[in-house]
Image 1 (cartoon, rainbow, N blue to C red):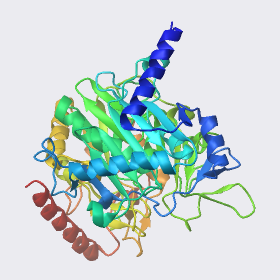
Image 2: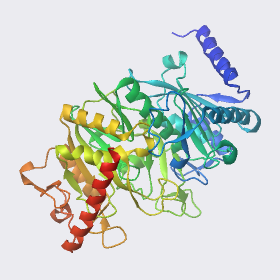
Image 3: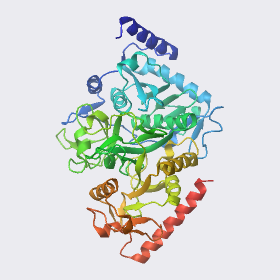
Image 4: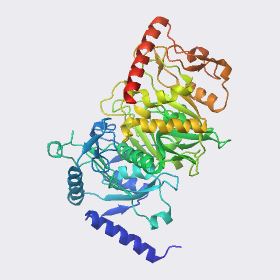
Length: 528
């Protein structure tokens, strides 16, 4: 039982923290409920309600993350540990301190409405759980944080001390020439101080991914835990039947891991410890472009009051969401807590994965829709992270763009990719997990040519066949060029779809050989 003295201690701590960092505003809202935040967002004209109850908000100029504007503070701790050559940009401690002070000053002088502060947690595993304090100038961003980060219990709130601090001011901008940044918007991660600064962008995904990036440094370095950019679920009938789904945004992690016959652990960020798999987050951030109740019933049902919809539009003269409209961006998103789903795994950690899926959106249309990786191929395909970035997931992506993203998450890896890849392979070998590659991209031809995207229903059937042990390994055959193992028969899937070879066999082999040579060259460069 908590007494009034406990409450006074909590208030005293909060006041002391505000004084320490210099925030002087009086109209501060702590731990606001979703209903309060929705009301504030509407009052502040940050968003409007759709007819399904969701809060629809626009992220303005930035419709996706901006990796080129993400920085780490380079100090004595990070100078020799972060992989600076892998697209990790550096700023000095002086630049960080200057921007930090100016952001606090901005809060005190320019934030006209309320300031929102939230105490949250990351990592469901109690041994690795960390406390996070988030400061937002906009109510709808704070609602996003309520959903995506883990909500502490009353007992945890009464003894809360933040290990990580995140400050997000979308209306504050840097002076690139003065601050030595590429642009006026930025995300800066100070690993030593465990402080994250985000400004100049209203895209909410920057918040969740910056925290994920920080964990990608802390967990391997301090705890030998492998952080993974993947979704995870478990069978309702067998708790030992855990599955992981790796892939970049747009490859199907959320959609394919959210299944009616399996319990969702999480849709995007997980850790692999010596005693199991655990979620980093408390919610989902699902792509909703083209969403229909028939194709993605669980996600459709999760979109209701309290859900945040990003960059979606309405049918004319209505408040009905037009999910198929790409005029604004294809990177339309829904942010909702796991509690909005009907089938969620509620334990702190799950068993080791029996099956692991690498989801790739192959715009070349060369990889088979499903294949089993041989032992010697696992490191190769994991560290390559071959896929195509689809429209809207990052600034400037309009049509699918071929990319190699180390460990299926290069933008979020502070350490050298090989460190993560070797940890992954050791765990796969130790726990004898099977690793599959699922091409959710094009088949029978390349994007924009004769090819077509693999139907979602067939991708679901392939994954279901693996998870339910319906594939006969004596019916597998080696694919040409890539030497992947392909099932000859898969329940629910047309036999001809399982073979990736085009009608023009010679043209397919030339294209496949060219891609595989690029893969080999990239792999050699990445493991140096």
